[in-house]
Length: 499
Ligand code: UN1
Image 1 (cartoon, rainbow, N blue to C red):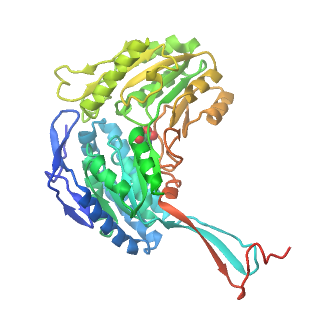
Image 2: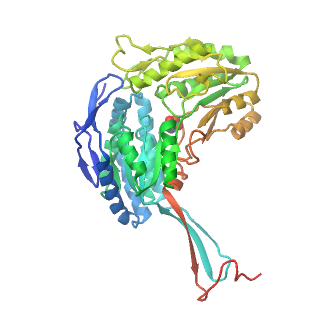
């Protein structure tokens, strides 16, 4: 299956352009096989200190490099990623478990982001606007904030890293990045690509380690002026509190409890395909994964039967095998959390139609596999209808009308993604207006965001910021307003205005 291997036995930090080993490390497990594939450094706060120093120094020059030239580096990063797409994809499957087709999609998302953000090097638009006084010029533009801290998750170890690092670097910042310890290979490969693409030393610094050591040191560091985080709700909230005390800008991208709504006029077979792809792709370990199906009662039984038939055909296994549709869960802790929710669902009175178990037969016993699971007759207030499970578990919730479906969709603490299957144009337009999520799909599942649109959610999913899209630049820049008075005399705004 795997044709590629890492060219180092141990992953190293990348600080000030130098690859550095640290004393402590931990094994990284391939979730499909249980094998240790590489060692990841467990750095201390001293590494963060060093990375911030290197970043601060490098940023002084980097901010003065014209943005179109900064963009050249990103174009080269994109080319190199494209050249290595297959290698990166296989390594991604090995460390994260997602099936190879999805891994290729994720790497492509990073390539897209490189080209898109590189294009921003010739835009980075500000505004010019009339001034209220004669012989006076007014404009605004974006300036980098300085040193920014990125904390990225294991479920999209390369795409999310590109969503954050590319706009940060393009805008003239220097970066200190803590990737998830479960998936350091993508970070190592991306840092190597940046190095080969000619990024000046110190503009990107990668420090591997735990959230409690490295993450905490980044959040508390005075010189890091922005933290951009994707991960769990609890960690995000705690980061926000700490950043709030320091008046540090923080961008949070957290959980979801995303629903597919299936109306009674929907193309049911299409809905089944959309649900399958968005619920069981990445084994449900996406912030955007569908974990609720809100279905009109008239088509509930039909939909259930079709879903069960389709789920029966899903092959579970090592994602490097092209025929496998559902890969492993990231680790045993992930499995345990899913198991806990299965019990909660049963206790709450939901009906388990299929799945609900870890897969531990001879072919799967060394990895961490969980059977695609379908609950039905779930009601709004059950915990399985409210809380993020991060696994291949879907709850069917019957409703009687469009209005009830919208209310059900919105009645959760999260607001990342939603979807509706219907052929009624009036329902389509009402849905896109009324579904309280940052992303809405019509006649498609809840996953598949494209990188040139803003990615993020309402309510408990985040704190109002967006990853990717041109909006990502708002996280990594400050707005500066500039007034040039060429009248040769003192002109006082608001006072010397002729009326
Ligand atoms: C995530 O789940 O954290 O829209 C990111 C999607 C992908 C990105 C998901 N393009 O599902």
